[in-house]
Length: 80
Image 1 (cartoon, one colour):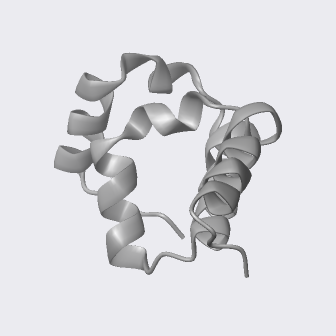
Image 2: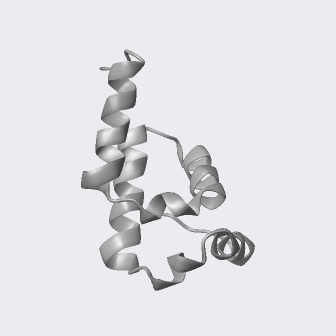
């Protein structure tokens, strides 16, 4: 589960105000789960990434995140 402090939440909102309009259950939680699983990041690194770059939650998994990660893996020869 992704838990943040009030200070971290405030910083995220300052960095990306539209996050206030996102549905937690329908948008934020599924993307957070997908990102952490897909990127295989431990909790600390993942939390730091999301808190510093909250705008990543604006991107569609299907239309943007997955194709971009797939392209990077191929380009950098990082396939499993």
